[in-house]
Structure formats: structure tokens, C-alpha cells
Image (cartoon, rainbow, N blue to C red; front, top):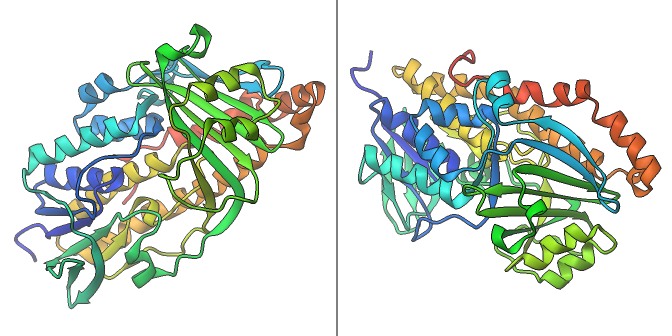
Amino acid sequence: MRNEKPSVIVLGAGLGGLTAALSLLQQGFDVKVFEQTRELKEVGAGLQLSANASRVLYNLGLAKQLQAIASEPAGKEIRLWNSGQSWKLFDLGTESVSRYGYPYYTVYRADLHKLLVDAVVACKADAIHLASRCVDVEQDGKRAVVRLENGASHTADVVIAADGVHSVIRSKLIAPDTPVFSGCMAWRGVIASDRLPAHLRSAVGVNWIGPGAHIIHYPMRQDRLVNFVGIVEKTDWQVESWTERGSSEECAQDFAGWHADVHTLIEALDTPFKWALMVRQPLDCWTRGNVTLLGDAAHPTLPFLAQGAAMAIEDGFVLGRCLAKYADAPEAALRAFETARIGRTSKIVQGSADNAKRFHNPALSGVEGAAAYVEQEWTAAKVQERYDWLFNYNVDEVAI
């Protein structure tokens, strides 16, 4: 039997890697985080933290910090692309707390990233090592050796590869990266709320749906910002990058004929970015010996259920539980983590793909047909079926 907890290296200081590091540090593990960038910063984008994700952050003692940076929308609604007709999707706010136990927040990704960085550093001042790009991991008996681009090598009992959608470790140890273009590209940007009319600053999340495209916008940073994402079916853009700049004119052209409110949002964007949405099939496994994948490295998904960040955050907490429970057998801990998570994450990946078809259905082209389609596809019973299992997930009780 071991007399001490296993040492852990986390590759990648994104949301999932930092959540795992924080969970483990709070439980007394020796953790080092290696991050390839020279500066800790996140791209300017928003994300949604449904109750299953906010539950994790509350369990990590970050409730007050999260409340200080987030917006808490009162609900979600659907709007039709051309007429602007709206339907309530579901209530949030107090309804999320009473139904699922925790709030539903919308946040600026950079704010959440800083919150997690600060929490990790508060636990261990030198936990995060920048300019430390991993190029290889080798299994050495019961330990793993991480080799960095700068020539340094580090050994640990456990390696957690949270190195993103283009994971080096996934390609080397688990499976080659085989992305297939989804047929959709996304526009994203952030808008200062004071640049918008009052009705576009309301505390709700909005899904505009139409034939071949949809748009999502919601408040962030105590309602001072609005996040914008527009997804459109097209074949002439296949660059999978979050930093590729486009123009407001090009974005507006992709949504020609859409409601005036949509174009008001697009005109208010400072810099719209664009990226191609790629599909990757769920992995059958993501663990080899004492090395495991986490977050986008393990289960990249299309952004149509708003669960990509939530899955990574859930991963980090469940992995912390597994390593604490099976501290004497790190490989068993990683197998338990994979077993606990792979079914849920694979179901989310598939559900996201299904939502793409629902949001872009040709039936949405005409007002009458669209109304019938919405009333058929977004009944209270169907909404509950699609979302309750997501939001009710309990990271601190799921079997490991």
C-alpha cells in the first residue's frame, strides 16, 4: 500500500485542466500544470454553465467568485429567423435552483478562466508552468515521463492530458485525429451591452432558428456584455481556428434576410471571428496505463447543447474523486474515471449533433410551417426529455 497520494501532471491550463488541478490540490495531491502558451489568457468568447457545471464550481468553494463575474439569465427563448416570433424554451433563475439545485450562469470565458487560475495559484503558487509545450508522453513502468518542447522532462504517477481538441497525447497514445467537416461554420463575437437597444439586453438566452442557420446570444459579466454565436451551413470555410478574423459585412451576408434584431447584433460586433465546426466520433476509450484524456481532448463536441465547457469541468471533478478514492492504484483510478464518464459524454456528443438538425430544419423557412414545427419539437415534455438528464447530473454522487 502507498503511504502518499500519487503525483499528478496536468497538460493544459484550460477550464478542464484547471478544474482537475484545483480538485486535486484541494485534496492534498502534488500537482503540476504544464501550459504551452507564454501567457495565461482565454479567447474572448462566452459559455453557458448549466446547473450540472455550476454544481462543480460550488463544490470547489467558488460560489461567491462565480456570482461576481457571471450573469444569471431568467430563461431561454426561441425566436424565428425572419419574423422574430418567440416561444419560451424554459425558465432558469430560481427555477434552475429549485429544479436542479444550482443556478444556470452565462459567463465570459476569460473571466471564468482567471477565476480558476487564481484558485489554483492560491492552493499552490508555482503549480502552473508556462511556455511548456508537451511533445510526448512515455510510460515508464508504473510512472509516466512527460517530454517538453524545451527539452525538459518530468515524471509523475499520473498524467492528465487536457490539451484540447488537437491533443498531442490523444494522437500519440489513443487514436489519430480524424476530424470531418460538419458542413457548418460559426461566427462568434462579444458586444458591449450599452451598444444595444434595451430589448436586446434582456436577461434571457435567445436561440434564433432558421433554415440552414441559427444564432445564439446571451448576457455575460453581470449583463455588461452580450455573447454572439451565429452558425451557418456552408462549404467554403473549413479552418478550425478560434482566432481567424472575419468582417461584420461577411457575417451579415451569411444572415441576409434575417430579422432586423439579428443585424443590429452583427453591426455591434467589434471583431467577428469565424471557425469551421468539425465532427469527431466518440472514442471507445481514452486511457492508457497511467495517462488519461480530459475535456476536448477526450470528447470534442459540436456546440449545439452548450455542454462542451460543462463536460470538461465535470471531468475535472470526477477525476479528482477517482484519484482520491483509488489513491493506491492510479491506473484503476483512471479506468474508473473513464467508466464513469464515457457513456454520458458520448451521449452529449450525439445529442449536440441532433440539435444541429433541429435548429436548421427546412420546415423553418415559412412562418406557418415554422410555428407548427416549433410547437411540435419544443413541447414541454420534449424539452424536459432533452435537458433534465443533463442538468440533474451530480458530480459528487455519480458512481465511481
